[in-house]
Length: 149
Image 1 (tube, rainbow, N blue to C red):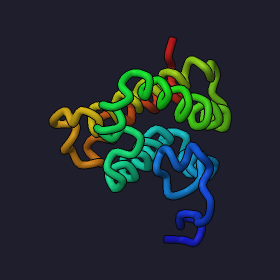
Image 2: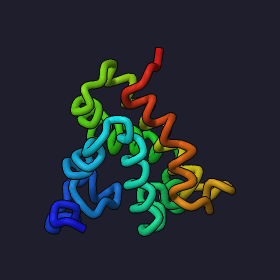
Image 3: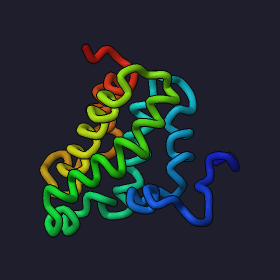
Image 4: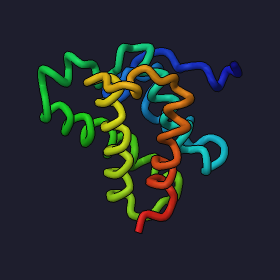
């Protein structure tokens, strides 16, 4: 792992802490856009899923969803993904319809997180990360930069 690929140390921003990222939100966005634009969806999902697998589901832990219900889900979508993650990610990718795309991206990631970690639906819960990313990344990629009519 190159020095630039190592997780940053120190104080993380509030969104990174809530998402259980080992690096700050700006670094997450930089890693998602690094390389081919055609792989941004794949990189985004892979980083999130591998991080959450290690941290017991991150913001989607079953106990968090169960105790806070729908209000928690709305907070996750709006407060963690749409504004802090997907809006700046989409701007850096040069996407159009940023608000619409950010909402679509958040719906995909939040839904997947709830299914995998919150309610543990099989086979999504037990699939290996690469298989799950292979299945879901094309949809996220389309929401990021593809045709969404």
